[in-house]
Structures are given as C-alpha cells and as structure tokens.
Amino acid sequence: MHAIEKYLAKAANKERVSTGEIVTAKVDLVEVNDLYLQVIKSFKEMGGDKVWNPDKVSFVFDHYSPTPTIKAADNHKKMREFCREQDIDHLFDINAGVCHQVLPEAGLVHPGMILVATDSHTTTHGAFGAFGTGVGATDLATILLSGELWFKVPEIIKIKIDGELKPNVMAKDVILHILGELKQDAAVYKAIEFTGSVVEEMSVAERMVLCNMSVEMGAKTTYIKPDQKTLDYLEPRVNREFEIVETDEDFEYVEVHHFDVSDLDPSVAKPHSIDNVDKVSNVVGEKVDQVFIGTCTGGRVNDIRVAAEILEGKKIADDIRLVVIPASDEVYKTAMEKGYIQTLVDSGATISAPGCGPCLGAHQGVLADGETCVATSSRNFPGRMGSTGAKVYSASPATAALTALKGSLADPGELKGRGE
Ligand SMILES: CC(C)[C@H](C(=O)O)[C@@H](O)C(=O)O
Ligand code: SF4
Image 1 (spheres, protein in one colour):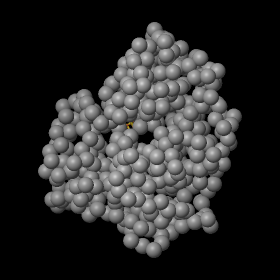
Image 2: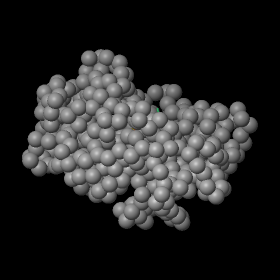
Image 3: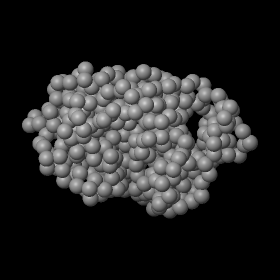
C-alpha cells in the first residue's frame, strides 16, 4: 500500500484498502471557512445538537475578512455564536489569515491525519504528509454529526521533479509548468505524490505551493514524504503523537511523470485558464494595472522576502498598483521583523490585513473591466478577481514584484541575482 492508503485504512479501522474502494474514515480535523454558514444550517437541519468533538473542529475567517459587507459580518457573527455554544476553541478570527497557512502554524496539521475543510486548497497539507481534502457544506455537516466521512480510495500519481532550479525560478514556476504540461483534468479524483531532488531541496513553504496548486489539476489530495525539514517545522508546533508510515516498495502508481526543471524559465498562466502556461519571456511588456502578492499559494514569508529584495530601495512604476497581503498574522509579523514590509511600503505597496483579499474577487483590490493583474494566486478564470472583463496572469512572487517595478510584465529570469 501507499502511505496515503495506510493512513486511510487506519482511519477506516481496516487492515488494508485498495484503489477505488469506498471507505468510511474517522476525521482528525475539520475546518469551516467564513463562506460556509450553510455548514451550520445543514448541521441543524440534520438534527445536529452538539458537534461530535469540539477539539477537532476549527473555524477560520479568511475569505471575507475583515468583513467587507453586512452579509459577511452577519456570517461571522453567527459562526462566533456557534463556536461559543459548541465550546469550539479553534476559532481563528479576522486577525489570523488564510486557513491553509493558519492551521499548520497553529500546530493542528501533522503527518497521517485526515483533514477535511470547506475549501478546495486543503490539498496544501500533503506537504506535511497529511491527507487533506476539500468538501461542500453538507459533507462537512455530516462530519460534525458523526466524526466520519466516506472516501473513495484514490489512484495515486507520482510526479518526480529533478534538476536544479535557475535563479529566480520558484516553486510557483515549477507547478505552473507541470500544470501546463499535464493540464487541468490530469488528476481528477486522484492523489498526487511529489518526489525528486527538487522537492527534497525545497523548504516546507515551497512544498506547500506544489500541493496547494495540485487541486488545479483536480487532485483529491497530495502527499510529500515527511523528512527532517517537515519534522523541524512540526516539532515546535504540534503537541500530539503522530506516526509516519512508509509506502511499500512494490506499490504501483497509476501514472509516473518525470520533470527535469534545470532549464525551466519563469512561467506564467495567461488569461483565462490556469493551464494556459507560457514562459514569462513570451509576454514581457504586456501592460499591467495591478500586481497582487498574497494568498495561500504565494503569500508566505519567502514570497514576501523575494518581492522585498527585488523592490529594495526602488519605487514601483507610476501607473501600477501593488497590493501585498501576508497569508497569516505570523507571516505578517515575521515579514515586519525582517524589514520586508517596510521595504515594500517604501516602494509604494499597499499592505492589507492577512486573509484571501482579492484572490476570489471579494475585496481589497478587485479589478475593473478591462484591467490586467499579475497575481501570485492560483486561479485566473474570468471574474475570479472582479470584473469578468479583467485579465489575470498567475505568476511567481519574483515575476509579480519585477512587474510592479517595471509597470508591465517583466521576466525575473533576466536578473543576475535577486534584486539586481
Ligand atoms: C470559495 C472557496 C470555498 C474556494 C475554494 O474552495 O477553493 C476558494 O478558497 C477558492 O480559492 O476558490
Ligand atoms: S487565498 Fe485564494 S485560493 Fe487560498 S483559500 Fe483564499 S480564496 Fe482560496
């Protein structure tokens, strides 16, 4: 069996599971974001009184945070009330940030756990060897009642990434390149495991980018074998026992893809599809109105550092806006302590409160008809960041920052080192 299957088997209280089988598994943690008041409504409609285990339930206010509308404020209010009445302590309010950054930082994510959230990018947590997946409101409400959910044991694709990345080529470029090659439907209801020397070299934060964007290929979940870097991240945060299991040597993957990324140049997903991938060098000079650095894909400390190094001592172009939103409160504080926030503010950036921001077109920088944005986020379909008449290029933080400096799409592959 694969490690993922072993974890599912354990959660389903079975000796073994096999691909395609439907199992009912115990869930270790659920997370409800602030878009999903329907979870509470469904829970009550199904006759719910007390949630099965308040310690295993979390709420994160990230998509509409701080609240931009009365409706959003009402949702937050009702969710706070629910948490109070249910003794749910894991309520991450408007100061916390995006759930996929907040939960690992809070020590709630660990290898082998089954984590289910009302958000598709829950695949992010495969970076820690967790089985993370997104569901809708009624499925989540079912877990609140029973602590369990059914899963079809997914086929598993192996993606091996080897080589040595060129300067200013980031994890985002790697996953965009893979998406461009394999396309959006490559992994529908399949799991993806990432391996190879490039993955081993990556920080935990960079691995999260690969796992995060796997859902853009339809992945049900993802997996990266935990190593010392994973343990170093988890050690000061997680205060419970967890078990790391190995994939059996004779496990057969449904597909194996091998990428050598030594020659990879900075990549971009052009409007209006995330697998419409090209080299940044092919779109250099395209006029851009706004740059957005943030989200659960591209708003971590490393992303903000790269942007700050490119913009250090310089001003963004006159006719461009740069919106920077740290993925979490912890990211914000670290970026502040390191001076990155100061550098960015000095360069002309607008810094907003941690959260999803304009990623899904809610607030803090939505786009007008006819505008073009370069964003470090994960989706670029029409209307994603505001007007359906706006264009979104999804790119790395390095590409985004250099674009803000130049005022039009710019290729960080041309920089000799960072910030030159
Ligand atoms: C709206 C929300 C539930 C959604 C998701 O499931 O991913 C959002 O976070 C996104 O990125 O589109
Ligand atoms: S930052 Fe964007 S991709 Fe991530 S959870 Fe929020 S809306 Fe979804």
